[in-house]
Image (cartoon, rainbow, N blue to C red; front, side, top):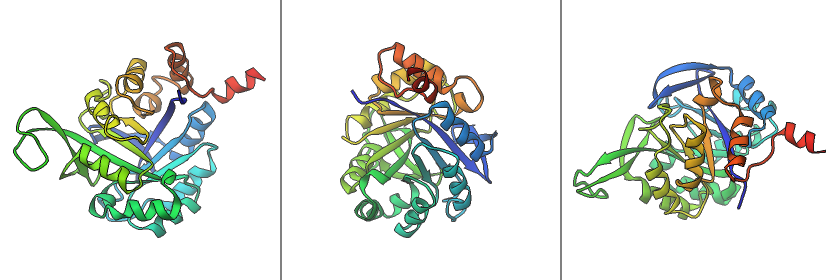
Length: 271
């Protein structure tokens, strides 16, 4: 079994890390460069940097902050926010990003995934999906009974009418190398990931899926990686505000029988 990855998420607005609940009521969580350096030294496996208002404000991610963040870490860095063309992908990759995360622009122009994968490789292409549970309304793509999940764009502000399962399958076919799946219903609640959503998506695609939205306890992380089938877990609130450390998470998951990469401290002690 491949090692499960623990990935802190830096949602950045106006140059500061923020965290809210269901994409609103944002609280300040510090400087992105300082946060990134701290998580890297703690033993995080990767980092995700999302400029959460770039698409809404019709601008691109803050390249200088991305560059400084990349300089502060020694682990893979994924960057998203207003990425609307391959040239900007290249600019971010040259600024230190290892992967780019596409959301709104890819929904408007799915071929952006295909072009990016051909130019930079599928391993660089992460498709972020903001999903919200909806009741059957009779619209195309939605059943008349039960619930499904709809894709939202523009930082969770705009419903697209796209079914989540249909979209992740299309994204994989176009060349996406990974899905970053956020439950808008669970985000910031600390009540746990949407395991039904996770299981549906991981069962529909063969590429890795990162679970995002709802982590409040160590058990929630374990459930996402087992019952939900996720390959990695994204966490924000429980890390930013000191509830748990990366070491706490990895120690717990190891005790529960899941493979994780050792932290730098553990690697040093093993020498």
